[in-house]
Length: 285
Image (cartoon, rainbow, N blue to C red; front, side):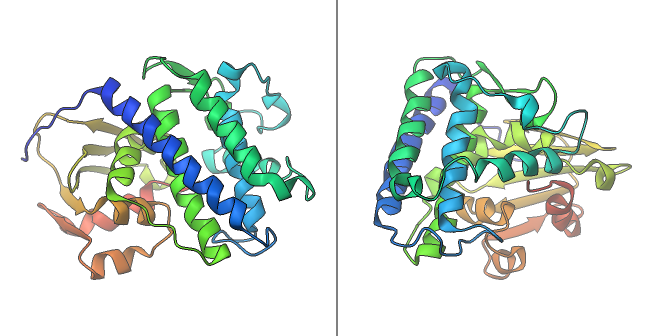
């Protein structure tokens, strides 16, 4: 059944903050060296500058409650119980228009200001402090540790998008990826379930990331629950993955087949063939 591990949520949250601060500095340095903000990025239809603006908007969105910067979400987010992809797409479309072409010359400074404001305003707050996230659903909140982990994931993944457009290196360290997976995914994966595809599906996945964390991902007729350090139970499929490979494959920055073919992800358990269903059932906004 596997070994149950434990972690200190406060210690890991503080470590995630430290790693986010370091990654942010690395991102800002790279943005300062970019000579063509209009170059195509590693995201369809977005330029390097668009990705940078999107990152700045993310820090503003998650930090607005604590920094005192009011956000008029009713003018941005589609009303009603819309699918997550539709809500996030609307916010993303607006986010890239928040900084004009002339201001993009100092995009690194803008990202630094927004990122540092988030870290400064949330310093010392408990990991479970609720953070309003209306783009995820009406009245939705996420715990601060998940918001911080998500912003680290955005920095790492979109940093790669910028680096690809700017033809620069952008390594993602396994320890960085582990923090994103452990801090963000237990909260975000259930929100990103494709309800139509998951209707009538019942699968229990044991997701074992090399070096940690370990997540129990249970799909049950349209809903998903993700439990970290779950008690031993009977699983249908066990997925063992290297952290960086899993993170980038989850966000479709590397092909899943390539990760499997190179041995960085493998499936086992009673029904190993179900492993590919995980990426089909969990959407990537």
